[in-house]
Amino acid sequence: MNYCHICDTNQAKGIFIYDLYICESCQTKIVATDPEDPNYRFFVNKLKRIQKSPLNS
Ligand SMILES: [Zn+2]
Image 1 (cartoon, helix red, strand yellow):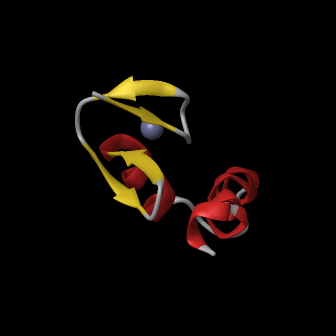
Image 2: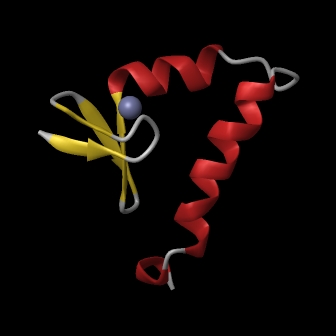
């Protein structure tokens, strides 16, 4: 189990993008979300944490 930073729950299936874990269902949602959908901004803001993480510098 890993903690998904998008839906804020522990999920068994998912991938790591750098240090950020994204569960399988959130990956599917992100891919399926239209950029004009308000939810898309929500996902992008979550993903921006990756770039700001000190672990990547
Ligand atoms: Zn998730």
